[in-house]
Length: 218
Image 1 (tube, rainbow, N blue to C red):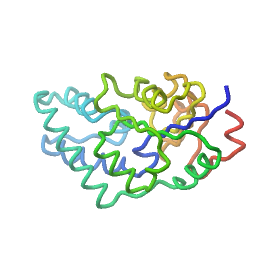
Image 2 (image 1 turned 45 degrees about the vertical axis):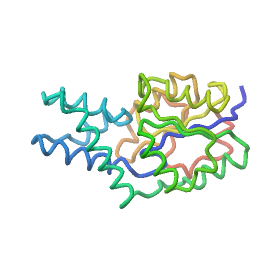
Image 3 (image 1 turned 180 degrees about the vertical axis):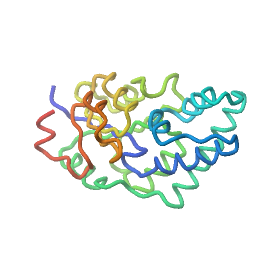
């Protein structure tokens, strides 16, 4: 099946927001006198905020009744931080130009809530290129479940096996592969040698490195 559709993750792939999510989470957990290590944080990257919080609230034996309010606090803080200091990841303009030039249908599938997605889309200036946007925040399941990718493909009127996805997290990669889509991972530098990326169809260090030869190899 010839690839004709591309679906992008957002946080950590198109915008350098993962440090901002961690900053917001660190501030929240500091109120409980708890702190996540970098390794702990990375292990739950790609999950929806409520699932991320539920996991660590249980881990630290914190009151689960406070998860909903904690989610509101974290998301609000991330939106504020993105407005203040969010910036594109390297290669965003290149990768969109690459697929626009090849007449690919382009979509975005994110675990983030719509208000943050809309903010980032406007910040990056990619709204006119996106034919579909899917947020997992209101779905029954988030990543690593494939629902958000399958929903985006349906909106794009695309067959999953004709889709290529770009991800930066393990949970996102699993979601894309579970949707029967090709997956290119762009992991963070400190996690790039992790053997888990072997499940991806391709691993690159930056979006700038993607080219016609690599597309043809998938």
